[in-house]
Amino acid sequence: MTEIKIIFVRHGEAASAYGDHEDPGLSKKGLSQSNDLLRNNKLQNLEQYTFISSPKLRAIETAEPLARKFNKEILIDDIFIEIPSKDIQINKKQQWLKQIVDTKIKDLPENVKLWVNNILKRTSGIREHSIIFTHFMVMNALLGQLTKSEKLLCFYPDYTSILEIDVKEGKIKSFSKKNGKKTYINL
Image (cartoon, rainbow, N blue to C red; front, side, top):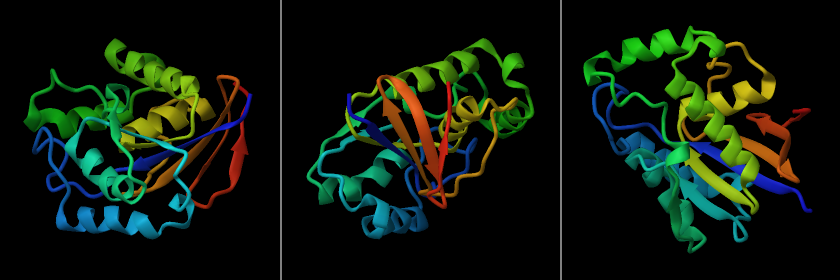
């Protein structure tokens, strides 16, 4: 079986902060960041890639310039949506998130643990080269599992940051972030 490349891209800057709006689109700066992806060296050969996005508008809008460039449909996948917080009042989401990132993974609420596990399971199950437009905490959930981090927050991807994952025979073999240096893992 061939090795599958999966590229995670964090969305561009949102027009509203987390906890201020349920589903903001991109700000002007975020739109510029999504257009800048067109010139990113790592994203020049995506003809054979499936384009996947979180259902959130900011992720979809980040995907759109590259999808147009490669004439791709953007498939929506709820697994890659931001951390589940629908039962948290919008004005309390920032405070709730601060508590969550300080909580050990083993002590997280069950719905958050399930969300983390589903991200890892879906990523391991991808069978074709894919680019996934998603969120800060999704990337942290995945990388936290791969590095066996005690907490959900384990790195700080900037807007439109890239996390590359290699999957072979349904197992994640390596990942690289920012500087492009691969880290090999054994799950």
